[in-house]
Length: 373
Ligand code: KG4
Ligand code: ZN
Image 1 (cartoon, helix red, strand yellow):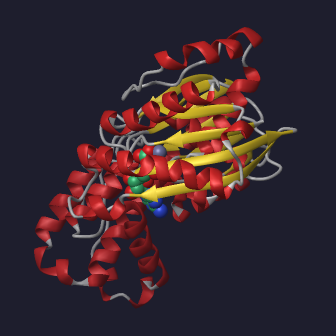
Image 2 (cartoon, protein in one colour):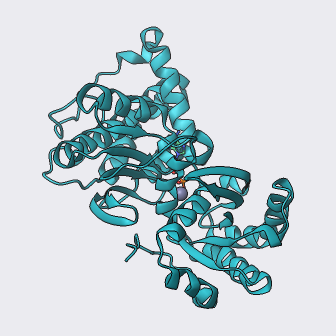
C-alpha cells in the first residue's frame, strides 16, 4: 500500500509517500520544509509564526511530494497525519489539510501520535524488524521518556522528565552561550570539537568536580540530576541552571571559544550520562529484545556511541536500532511508517471506520501514546 503522510507538529512542514509491502518500507518521497531560519532570530519556535508558515507551505510541500514520487492522488491508499502532541496552531494546519484531502480524494485518514512516529522511524532502515518487548528512549525537543512496548502499539511509560526535555535543555544552554537555534546540533558540534582537541586546550585546566555532589557515577563539571533516584524519571532543569550559574561565575571567559566548547562538552556529558544510566536500569529490569532511540536528540553522536558501548558490553542479545540521521529529526516518513503498521494491525471494521471518521479527527497538543485495542 501507498501512504501519503503529513507532519506539522512544530517548525517543519513535512510530507512523505511511503510504500509498505512484504513488511518492508520504501520511502518514495520525503519533503521537509524547515522554518529554522525564521525562528532562529527569536531563539525558539514562535507558534503563530509556525502556523502561518505551515499554511503557506503545506500545499506546495504535498504537491512536490506527490510529484517526486511520480504519483497521483488515485495511487494513494491511505492518508496519515500527526494528530499530536505538538503546538496547537501548527498541528491544526496539517490536520485540516489531511481532512480536506480525505474528503475530496475519498480516502481513509489515520491520526498518528508524533512520538510513535519517532519510534517507528527505526523501521525505515532496510531489513529492519522490531522484536518485542521493545524499550524506547524517546528524546526530543518536548519529551524525554523511557517507554516499554510489549507488542506493536502497546505502550507503557516507565519514566519521563519532571521538567525540561533533553532537547529543550540543549536549546536553552545554547541560548545562554549565544549559540544558534536549534541548540542541539550546535552544542553537540562544539562538544565534539572539544573532545577532539581536549589535550591541547588551555581551558581543559578548568577544575572539574567543583559542584558535583549529585552523582555516584562519572564525574564532571555539572550535576547528573536524578541519577540515583529509584525510578526511570529525568530532570534537566537543575542541570540547565547549574550551567547558568557557572557561566555567571566565568563571565570573562565567555568570549573564549575553547571555553564555550568545554562547557558544551561538560553539559553534553552530563545529559548523556543520565540518559545512558537510566536506560541501563531499564534494560536490566526488562531485558527487552529490542532497544531503540527516537526523537531529535537521537541524532546526537555521543549519545549513540555511549549507548552502543553499553549494549555491546552488557546487553549483547538486545537488538539496538537507531534511526537514520535523516529520520531522527521531524519528518513525515516516520508518520507514514507508523500509519502503515497501525493500519496492518487494525481489524477490518476499524479500517472501514477510517473512511467515515476522518472528519472527527482533531489535533491534540498533549496527545499521549494510544494503545491499539
Ligand atoms: O524530534 P525533534 O526534531 O522535534 C521535536 O519533536 O521536539 O527534536 C528537536 C530537538 C531540538 O531540541 C534539538 O536541539 C535536538 O532535538 N537535537 C539535538 C541534536 N540534533 C537535534 N540534540 C542534541 N544533539 C543533536 N545532535
Ligand atoms: Zn519530533
